[in-house]
Length: 149
Image (tube, rainbow, N blue to C red; front, side):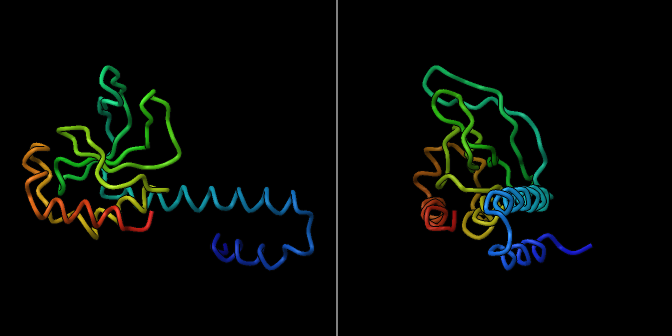
């Protein structure tokens, strides 16, 4: 069985010879499969659970989150707006305060990669006040904001 990436590449080469609607439908299906596989690989060391997440001053919702035993104090989850509606992105959040760290990422894989590259060396299992006064945590947050989303 050929890899999906190769099929995707071949499909791009065939683009001029097939119907546009059919082409883009197939392309979207392939992208979805590749994205699902990437999410599974990224989540390998991150265990799924649930957590109450405060989305506004008076609204809390229960959400599916991913935690890594090597990084207590951090969770990765789908983006949620202040109304409690799901958005198409991923957040890295501080468990104790519920505050988002860095930007919204387009995939879990990108959130995990950015966290590993910029923030995995920080002890996140502390209060938000302590983290705001820690130069390493400030540097990590800045690095996450610059990371590929």
